[in-house]
Amino acid sequence: MTNFKAPEKKHVYVNYNVGRYNLLSSKDVAQYSFRFPHLSQEEIKELGIRTFYNLELEEDYGFTGDALDVAYEIKQIIDGYWMNSSKGDIEKLVEYLESIEEDQAELREQYEIDYAKAKVDYWTEKYEKLTR
Image (cartoon, rainbow, N blue to C red; front, side, top):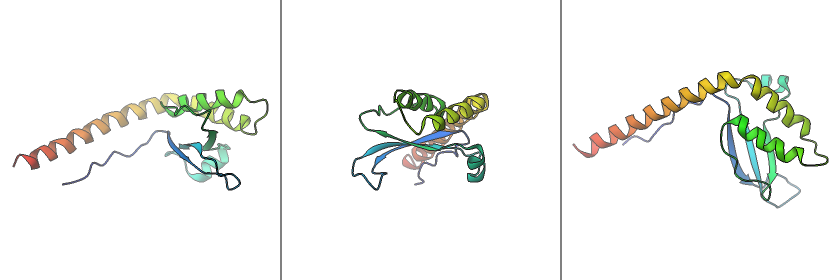
């Protein structure tokens, strides 16, 4: 039996993990990692976009939604700090995501369609194998 294979994501998305990402601290933190399938590492560097943000678990609410929604939530937390070295980075990320939002909305919608088709194909194949 074949395993389900999700379609390739072509839209900007966010990976979420909890772990120890600071060598100087043993505390777990939430890490949000923004992925840009349409950009190379060099292009990301040229744009000056920071792709990951760590939040204390007390401040993390497991933000969901599209990348822009998550960036807004992270920005709101960072803006609440009197001083934070990430303020300029998150503002730049939000500005970039806002500038590509129209195209990203279309790519997210197409991904949802492709994902649904892949699920139907998977379960149809599984059903056919089980009923032979």
